Image 1 (cartoon, rainbow, N blue to C red):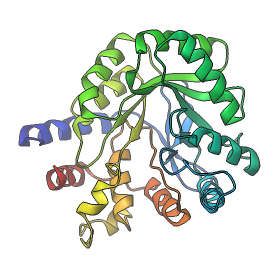
Image 2 (spheres, helix red, strand yellow):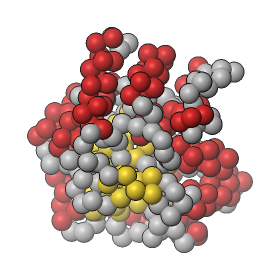
Image 3 (cartoon, helix red, strand yellow):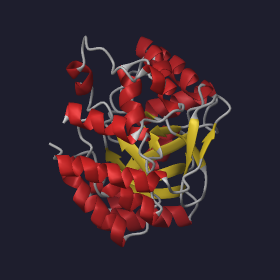
Length: 302
Protein backbone atom coordinates (compact mmCIF):
# COMPACT_ATOMS: atom_id res chain seq x y z
CA UNK A 1 0.00 0.00 0.00
CA UNK A 2 1.09 3.53 -0.67
CA UNK A 3 0.94 5.59 2.50
CA UNK A 4 -0.37 9.13 2.22
CA UNK A 5 3.15 10.52 2.65
CA UNK A 6 4.31 8.36 -0.27
CA UNK A 7 1.53 9.68 -2.50
CA UNK A 8 2.48 13.24 -1.61
CA UNK A 9 6.16 12.49 -2.12
CA UNK A 10 5.45 10.97 -5.55
CA UNK A 11 3.38 14.01 -6.46
CA UNK A 12 6.18 16.36 -5.51
CA UNK A 13 8.63 14.35 -7.59
CA UNK A 14 6.29 14.47 -10.56
CA UNK A 15 6.12 18.24 -10.25
CA UNK A 16 9.89 18.52 -10.38
CA UNK A 17 10.17 16.18 -13.37
CA UNK A 18 7.35 17.83 -15.27
CA UNK A 19 9.23 21.12 -15.09
CA UNK A 20 12.33 19.68 -16.74
CA UNK A 21 12.86 19.83 -20.51
CA UNK A 22 11.66 16.40 -21.62
CA UNK A 23 10.54 17.14 -25.15
CA UNK A 24 7.40 15.63 -26.63
CA UNK A 25 6.93 15.24 -30.36
CA UNK A 26 4.41 13.52 -32.57
CA UNK A 27 4.89 10.81 -35.16
CA UNK A 28 3.20 11.20 -38.55
CA UNK A 29 0.27 9.24 -37.10
CA UNK A 30 0.06 11.61 -34.14
CA UNK A 31 1.52 9.23 -31.56
CA UNK A 32 3.58 11.09 -28.97
CA UNK A 33 7.27 10.36 -28.65
CA UNK A 34 9.89 10.70 -25.93
CA UNK A 35 13.60 11.11 -26.46
CA UNK A 36 16.18 8.53 -25.43
CA UNK A 37 18.54 10.57 -23.23
CA UNK A 38 21.67 8.82 -24.52
CA UNK A 39 21.15 9.87 -28.13
CA UNK A 40 18.10 12.11 -28.48
CA UNK A 41 16.37 9.50 -30.64
CA UNK A 42 12.58 9.88 -30.40
CA UNK A 43 10.55 6.75 -29.64
CA UNK A 44 6.74 6.46 -29.61
CA UNK A 45 5.30 6.24 -26.10
CA UNK A 46 3.18 3.18 -26.97
CA UNK A 47 5.12 0.06 -27.84
CA UNK A 48 4.34 -3.65 -27.76
CA UNK A 49 5.44 -6.83 -26.03
CA UNK A 50 5.46 -10.42 -27.27
CA UNK A 51 5.17 -12.46 -24.07
CA UNK A 52 2.11 -14.69 -24.38
CA UNK A 53 0.56 -12.97 -27.38
CA UNK A 54 3.28 -14.03 -29.86
CA UNK A 55 3.63 -17.56 -28.54
CA UNK A 56 1.68 -19.04 -31.46
CA UNK A 57 2.24 -21.50 -34.31
CA UNK A 58 3.50 -20.05 -37.58
CA UNK A 59 0.76 -20.10 -40.22
CA UNK A 60 -2.04 -20.61 -37.69
CA UNK A 61 -5.15 -18.43 -37.41
CA UNK A 62 -3.54 -16.70 -34.43
CA UNK A 63 -0.44 -16.05 -36.52
CA UNK A 64 -2.48 -14.49 -39.32
CA UNK A 65 -4.24 -12.33 -36.75
CA UNK A 66 -0.88 -11.11 -35.47
CA UNK A 67 -0.13 -9.82 -38.98
CA UNK A 68 -3.16 -7.58 -38.64
CA UNK A 69 -2.04 -6.55 -35.16
CA UNK A 70 1.39 -5.51 -36.43
CA UNK A 71 -0.07 -3.70 -39.43
CA UNK A 72 -2.25 -1.67 -37.07
CA UNK A 73 0.71 -1.08 -34.76
CA UNK A 74 3.06 0.26 -37.43
CA UNK A 75 0.37 2.18 -39.30
CA UNK A 76 -0.57 3.79 -35.98
CA UNK A 77 2.97 5.08 -35.41
CA UNK A 78 4.30 2.28 -33.20
CA UNK A 79 7.94 1.17 -33.41
CA UNK A 80 9.18 -0.41 -30.16
CA UNK A 81 8.61 -4.16 -29.78
CA UNK A 82 10.08 -6.01 -26.80
CA UNK A 83 10.74 -9.74 -26.94
CA UNK A 84 12.96 -12.42 -25.42
CA UNK A 85 14.52 -15.76 -26.40
CA UNK A 86 12.68 -17.43 -23.52
CA UNK A 87 9.15 -16.35 -24.48
CA UNK A 88 8.13 -19.69 -25.93
CA UNK A 89 9.32 -19.01 -29.48
CA UNK A 90 7.84 -15.50 -29.64
CA UNK A 91 11.06 -14.03 -31.03
CA UNK A 92 10.99 -16.44 -33.96
CA UNK A 93 7.36 -15.56 -34.70
CA UNK A 94 8.17 -11.86 -34.48
CA UNK A 95 11.11 -12.25 -36.84
CA UNK A 96 9.02 -14.11 -39.39
CA UNK A 97 6.20 -11.56 -39.21
CA UNK A 98 8.58 -8.62 -39.57
CA UNK A 99 10.17 -10.22 -42.61
CA UNK A 100 6.87 -11.11 -44.26
CA UNK A 101 5.42 -7.66 -43.59
CA UNK A 102 8.55 -5.76 -44.62
CA UNK A 103 8.61 -4.07 -41.21
CA UNK A 104 12.18 -4.69 -40.07
CA UNK A 105 13.29 -1.14 -40.88
CA UNK A 106 10.33 0.37 -39.04
CA UNK A 107 10.75 -1.75 -35.92
CA UNK A 108 12.85 -0.83 -32.89
CA UNK A 109 13.67 -4.36 -31.70
CA UNK A 110 14.36 -4.80 -28.00
CA UNK A 111 15.41 -8.28 -26.92
CA UNK A 112 17.21 -9.86 -23.98
CA UNK A 113 19.98 -12.09 -22.72
CA UNK A 114 18.77 -14.67 -20.21
CA UNK A 115 21.81 -16.86 -19.56
CA UNK A 116 23.99 -18.07 -16.70
CA UNK A 117 27.40 -17.99 -18.38
CA UNK A 118 29.30 -16.19 -21.11
CA UNK A 119 29.24 -19.29 -23.32
CA UNK A 120 25.49 -19.71 -22.90
CA UNK A 121 24.96 -16.03 -23.67
CA UNK A 122 26.98 -16.26 -26.89
CA UNK A 123 24.94 -19.25 -28.05
CA UNK A 124 21.68 -17.59 -27.08
CA UNK A 125 22.61 -14.36 -28.85
CA UNK A 126 23.39 -16.23 -32.07
CA UNK A 127 20.01 -17.94 -31.80
CA UNK A 128 18.25 -14.64 -31.18
CA UNK A 129 19.67 -13.06 -34.33
CA UNK A 130 18.63 -16.12 -36.34
CA UNK A 131 15.12 -16.13 -34.85
CA UNK A 132 14.64 -12.40 -35.35
CA UNK A 133 16.04 -12.63 -38.91
CA UNK A 134 18.44 -9.76 -38.43
CA UNK A 135 22.15 -9.13 -37.86
CA UNK A 136 21.63 -6.55 -35.12
CA UNK A 137 19.03 -5.21 -32.69
CA UNK A 138 18.28 -1.80 -31.27
CA UNK A 139 18.27 -2.66 -27.56
CA UNK A 140 19.83 -5.62 -25.75
CA UNK A 141 18.72 -6.06 -22.14
CA UNK A 142 19.86 -8.32 -19.32
CA UNK A 143 16.69 -10.23 -18.47
CA UNK A 144 15.57 -9.83 -14.84
CA UNK A 145 19.17 -9.06 -13.79
CA UNK A 146 20.14 -12.69 -14.49
CA UNK A 147 23.91 -13.06 -14.03
CA UNK A 148 24.13 -9.37 -14.83
CA UNK A 149 27.73 -8.97 -13.65
CA UNK A 150 28.76 -11.28 -16.50
CA UNK A 151 26.13 -10.47 -19.09
CA UNK A 152 26.19 -6.66 -18.92
CA UNK A 153 29.87 -6.48 -19.98
CA UNK A 154 29.08 -8.94 -22.79
CA UNK A 155 26.18 -6.76 -23.95
CA UNK A 156 28.54 -3.78 -23.98
CA UNK A 157 30.97 -5.76 -26.15
CA UNK A 158 28.16 -6.36 -28.62
CA UNK A 159 27.34 -2.66 -28.57
CA UNK A 160 30.95 -1.81 -29.39
CA UNK A 161 30.74 -4.25 -32.30
CA UNK A 162 27.63 -2.51 -33.65
CA UNK A 163 25.38 -5.48 -32.90
CA UNK A 164 23.13 -3.42 -30.65
CA UNK A 165 22.67 0.33 -30.35
CA UNK A 166 21.60 0.38 -26.71
CA UNK A 167 22.16 -1.73 -23.57
CA UNK A 168 19.92 -2.10 -20.54
CA UNK A 169 18.59 -4.24 -17.70
CA UNK A 170 15.10 -5.46 -16.83
CA UNK A 171 12.95 -6.62 -13.95
CA UNK A 172 9.24 -7.15 -13.51
CA UNK A 173 8.63 -7.14 -9.77
CA UNK A 174 8.64 -4.49 -7.06
CA UNK A 175 11.11 -6.67 -5.15
CA UNK A 176 13.71 -6.15 -7.87
CA UNK A 177 13.54 -2.38 -7.98
CA UNK A 178 16.07 -1.67 -5.23
CA UNK A 179 18.72 -3.71 -7.03
CA UNK A 180 17.84 -2.06 -10.34
CA UNK A 181 18.33 1.32 -8.64
CA UNK A 182 21.72 0.25 -7.26
CA UNK A 183 22.85 -0.77 -10.75
CA UNK A 184 21.57 2.47 -12.28
CA UNK A 185 23.69 4.36 -9.75
CA UNK A 186 26.84 2.34 -10.40
CA UNK A 187 26.73 1.33 -14.08
CA UNK A 188 26.34 3.33 -17.29
CA UNK A 189 23.06 2.21 -18.89
CA UNK A 190 21.01 3.38 -21.85
CA UNK A 191 17.72 1.78 -20.72
CA UNK A 192 15.98 0.00 -17.93
CA UNK A 193 12.72 -1.92 -18.13
CA UNK A 194 10.54 -2.15 -15.01
CA UNK A 195 6.97 -2.70 -13.84
CA UNK A 196 4.83 0.35 -13.13
CA UNK A 197 1.05 0.51 -12.88
CA UNK A 198 -1.83 2.07 -10.97
CA UNK A 199 -1.71 -0.77 -8.42
CA UNK A 200 2.11 -1.04 -8.33
CA UNK A 201 3.42 2.55 -8.47
CA UNK A 202 6.52 2.00 -6.32
CA UNK A 203 8.90 2.85 -9.17
CA UNK A 204 7.80 6.48 -8.95
CA UNK A 205 9.17 6.84 -5.42
CA UNK A 206 12.85 6.60 -6.34
CA UNK A 207 13.66 4.62 -9.46
CA UNK A 208 11.96 6.73 -12.12
CA UNK A 209 13.33 10.04 -10.78
CA UNK A 210 16.77 8.40 -10.55
CA UNK A 211 16.60 7.34 -14.21
CA UNK A 212 15.59 10.87 -15.15
CA UNK A 213 18.56 12.30 -13.29
CA UNK A 214 20.98 9.73 -14.73
CA UNK A 215 19.71 10.09 -18.31
CA UNK A 216 18.42 6.51 -18.58
CA UNK A 217 15.45 5.70 -20.83
CA UNK A 218 12.63 3.63 -19.32
CA UNK A 219 10.44 0.89 -20.76
CA UNK A 220 7.40 -0.06 -18.68
CA UNK A 221 6.07 -3.60 -18.41
CA UNK A 222 2.99 -5.01 -16.62
CA UNK A 223 0.95 -1.81 -16.98
CA UNK A 224 -2.15 -4.05 -16.82
CA UNK A 225 -0.71 -6.22 -14.00
CA UNK A 226 -0.88 -9.20 -16.36
CA UNK A 227 -4.58 -8.54 -16.96
CA UNK A 228 -5.60 -8.54 -13.30
CA UNK A 229 -6.53 -4.86 -13.42
CA UNK A 230 -9.27 -5.57 -15.95
CA UNK A 231 -10.88 -8.03 -13.55
CA UNK A 232 -10.89 -5.35 -10.86
CA UNK A 233 -12.72 -2.83 -13.04
CA UNK A 234 -15.16 -5.21 -14.71
CA UNK A 235 -18.53 -3.47 -15.16
CA UNK A 236 -17.14 -0.28 -13.59
CA UNK A 237 -17.48 3.07 -15.30
CA UNK A 238 -14.39 5.11 -16.07
CA UNK A 239 -13.65 8.10 -13.79
CA UNK A 240 -15.71 11.17 -14.60
CA UNK A 241 -12.61 13.03 -15.80
CA UNK A 242 -11.55 10.30 -18.25
CA UNK A 243 -13.22 11.84 -21.31
CA UNK A 244 -11.52 15.20 -20.83
CA UNK A 245 -8.20 13.32 -20.68
CA UNK A 246 -9.00 11.69 -24.03
CA UNK A 247 -9.56 8.26 -22.46
CA UNK A 248 -12.19 5.91 -23.84
CA UNK A 249 -11.30 2.60 -22.15
CA UNK A 250 -9.70 1.19 -19.04
CA UNK A 251 -6.76 -0.04 -21.14
CA UNK A 252 -6.12 3.51 -22.33
CA UNK A 253 -6.34 4.80 -18.76
CA UNK A 254 -3.84 2.26 -17.41
CA UNK A 255 -1.41 2.97 -20.25
CA UNK A 256 -1.80 6.72 -19.99
CA UNK A 257 -1.06 6.51 -16.26
CA UNK A 258 2.28 4.89 -17.08
CA UNK A 259 3.35 7.33 -19.79
CA UNK A 260 2.19 10.35 -17.81
CA UNK A 261 5.31 10.02 -15.69
CA UNK A 262 7.89 12.22 -17.46
CA UNK A 263 10.73 9.71 -16.93
CA UNK A 264 8.90 6.98 -18.86
CA UNK A 265 9.93 6.55 -22.49
CA UNK A 266 7.64 3.77 -23.74
CA UNK A 267 5.11 1.33 -22.31
CA UNK A 268 5.02 -2.14 -23.91
CA UNK A 269 1.63 -3.88 -23.54
CA UNK A 270 1.16 -7.20 -25.33
CA UNK A 271 -1.89 -8.18 -27.36
CA UNK A 272 -2.81 -10.62 -30.07
CA UNK A 273 -6.02 -8.83 -31.01
CA UNK A 274 -6.22 -6.04 -33.63
CA UNK A 275 -9.07 -4.25 -31.86
CA UNK A 276 -7.10 -4.07 -28.64
CA UNK A 277 -4.02 -2.88 -30.49
CA UNK A 278 -5.96 -0.01 -32.00
CA UNK A 279 -7.42 0.83 -28.60
CA UNK A 280 -4.01 0.83 -26.90
CA UNK A 281 -2.51 3.19 -29.47
CA UNK A 282 -5.16 5.76 -28.57
CA UNK A 283 -3.49 6.17 -25.16
CA UNK A 284 -0.43 7.69 -26.81
CA UNK A 285 -1.93 11.12 -27.43
CA UNK A 286 -2.22 14.30 -25.41
CA UNK A 287 -3.28 15.23 -22.83
CA UNK A 288 -1.33 13.34 -20.19
CA UNK A 289 -2.86 12.79 -16.76
CA UNK A 290 -2.44 15.52 -14.19
CA UNK A 291 -0.63 14.85 -10.93
CA UNK A 292 -4.00 14.91 -9.14
CA UNK A 293 -5.45 12.33 -11.53
CA UNK A 294 -2.42 10.06 -11.14
CA UNK A 295 -2.59 10.28 -7.36
CA UNK A 296 -6.35 9.59 -7.39
CA UNK A 297 -5.70 6.38 -9.36
CA UNK A 298 -2.94 5.30 -6.98
CA UNK A 299 -5.29 5.83 -4.06
CA UNK A 300 -8.08 3.89 -5.81
CA UNK A 301 -6.03 0.85 -6.78
CA UNK A 302 -3.49 0.42 -3.95
